[in-house]
Structures are given as C-alpha cells and as structure tokens.
Image (cartoon, rainbow, N blue to C red; front, side):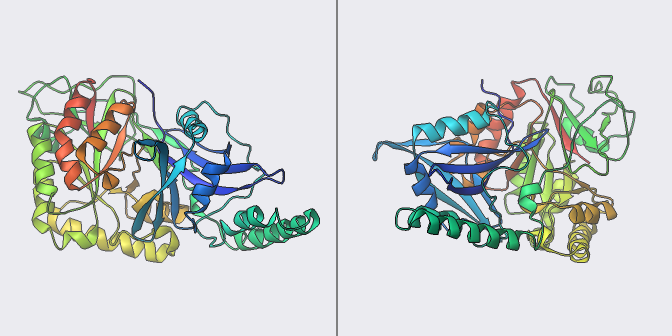
Length: 427
C-alpha cells in the first residue's frame, strides 16, 4: 500500500517562466516537515487551472487525487478555494503528466525547492496573485520582448510592494517544528477512559492522551485488565510547537464543527465500538445543541475548542483571538464543568499570536495529519476509500459531523481495528 502522510497540498503560485514554460509552486505539509516545490505542467492543465481564477482566497488546496471522466474520456482534478466560511471545490481537466507529478509529490519522490524559488509566491492576502502570470501569458505573444520584460519587472515590483505590507500565514502556516507524541502508561485515575473501553482489554486498545505532563517513551501502552482502572496515557507537547504526530502504533479520530444533530449518533457508534475520539466544538453551535455537548462528555469523549464562530482567526488581533477562544470555552465549560485544554484553529490557519492566545488559556493547539475531506464527499464510499488509500499508523484524522461521515464511520472503525492500532483521544 502507498504510504501517504501529506497533510496539505496548497497552491502558492501559477505562472510562466521567462522561457514560456508553465509552472506551479506547491507547499506540502507533512507529519514532520513543511516544504515547497516547483513543478512544470503542460499548457492544457495550466490554462484549465488559470480559467478557475481568481484564485485568491484564504487557502487554495490541491486535491491529491484525480479521477477519470468516462463521458469526456479525460482525467479531471480539483482545487478547493476557501474564502471566509466558504469552501468551494473547483474542477479542471488535467493531463496524465500533471497527475504523475502530483503522485510523485504525494509519495515524496520530488526534491523540494530552496528557500528562494525563482517564481513569485502567490498568497491569500494578495488579490492580484493570479493576474500577473495571466497578464504575461496573454501579452507575451502580442508585445515585443522588451515591452514584456518591462511589464514583468513592474509587475514583480508591485507584488513585492504589496507582500512586504504584512506576513502571510499560508506560506508559513506549519513552519514550526513538529513534536512527535511520546506515550507511556501512568497510574492516573481514568474514569473517562474506562467509560470508552468498558474495561475491555481488546487488541485495538482505547486510551486517552493528555497534554499536561512530560513523560518518557520507553515502554509501550497497555490497557489494564477488567478488574483494574484503565490508565490515562500522557503526552508532552512543548509550548513552542504548534502540532504533532502520533507514534506509528497509534491512531486518532477527531471530529470538527459540532455539536450538531448528528453528534449523539456519532458518539453512540464510537461507544458501541469502544473507540474514543476527540470532538472540537464551535461555540455558536453549543447554544443550539447543549444536550449533544453533555452527551459527548458523559460518554467519555474528549471535547476541545474550535473557536466561537469558525472565523479565520489569523486575521484577528491577539486580543480578539483571546476573546474569541474565551467565549467558546465558557460556553463549553458551562455544560461539561471541566476546563477545555485543546484548541483546533479553523481551516488549520495558525500563527504565533494564535498559539499564544491558546496557551494563555491553558490550551494546546491540536492539528492533524490525515484529511479525507469528508465534508466534500458525495457518498460514504468516497470517505472509506480514502482510509484504504493512506497509511493509518500514526494518523490523526480530521473528520466532520456530516451524514456521509456518520454512515462511513462503522466501516472506518472496522478497517482501523484490522490494523491492530491503539485508538487515542486527546486531553
């Protein structure tokens, strides 16, 4: 099976070189690194992507997989443009050469670019991100070379002038170091863990991971016998590290954007299967689904903060970020009567201020390293297919409270259990 640990493929630029070849600059975030790549693409794929413009937005993510259209007898791929609260999938015809290049990126077969690539980066905060390459492509065949060169020079100066006005999060989104989860057994009381496991010493174990005590990773995790209390498993995340990956014998299911009318059904499936999970709740939704919050907490699931309103918090001041997180925490804690210790930033957009705001409220910033894009799935089989395509070991999956996800969940759990992995929730 192909090993797939890519967290995000993000389009940073689309343009032509002075020699006329078409290029894309792509940022790839993986479990333990962030790197950028420049790949050459064919004219057809270039024009198809260019036609989707404007490409500016909060994020432009590239789907790692392409599909065959039997009616048009051609391949097609997609990007996901995120603007504010809106995620819009956009489809384009693509060549086999493009598909092969994306596959090589996915499998880590291409060399990353040095820090200063030759083609200019395009970012969400630059509305003109695609106009300059587009201008070059359309005018190069109509103007003398000297005129084209002057246009390119002035275009670059304009873009650099805009770019220096402020730092862009997407280009440095996961630039920090990654901390790997180090786990071991402790003798802490585990009422929550036992509620999930039922005291069952099954092969696919269920453990709770906390983030408030430094531990060693010399011994494996074991669930205790039925007559004993189940144990918390403790994880340390250094304060300056924004996210982490699990060791290869563990796997975690996390659910974003709740609570919702589907929360209880998801919790019931997890409880029946004796699998813990982590739910990241939006403050505004809590007021409409209070029973779902208490039901989730009462069944031993972990609950974290996913902001008050799912806004792009990196655009806020530190004070506004802190107020947003505090408002969501108060709504959750009023129902669970427990402090919230986890924070997941909407869209995965995070900067130093946001990490500081979360840390100031004693929360650790939790991201992910597996994304089935279940919110965009047309049917449950699309989600299940993703789980079979990727390497499960060490995965922190980001899922959403969606009908297709709910229907796919039993098959997902069955597949992950077949891998003899220990299921982990976070505290």
